[in-house]
Amino acid sequence: MIAIALALTAAILGAMSFFAFFVAPAAGKAGSSKTVLLLSRAVFPRAFDLFALLSAAAALFSAFGNQTPGAAILIIAACAFLWAGWSITPTLEQARDAARAGDELALADFRKARGQAVRANALQYVALLAACGFLAFG
Image 1 (tube, rainbow, N blue to C red):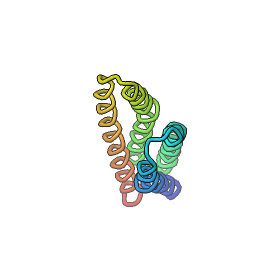
Image 2: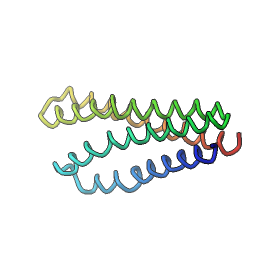
Image 3: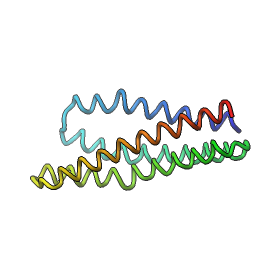
């Protein structure tokens, strides 16, 4: 059970890193075209949902393997993914749209949401790395 939880957790970390180091820079280089924005809006919420589901599954396998700290940390990661996908991402998109339409106050909202996104991403990485530690050595 622990091996499955560890494999799921490592897979999430790998996918997150792929998005961070390959997909996001490529999208940034492509510019802010309508196609890039549509792709981003289609992919990221679903990726967060998938990562939350995989984190919850890893937590279950961890709990079945009597690795309670690992399971608890994975639940925190799952919640951080849901927060990012269901709250931060829509706020970020709305603020981006309003700022592009000329709303200067929306730019402050965008910066705030972007800061939340960075903090959520850091929490996700830290939680998943900590869970890997507990699962591998705990």
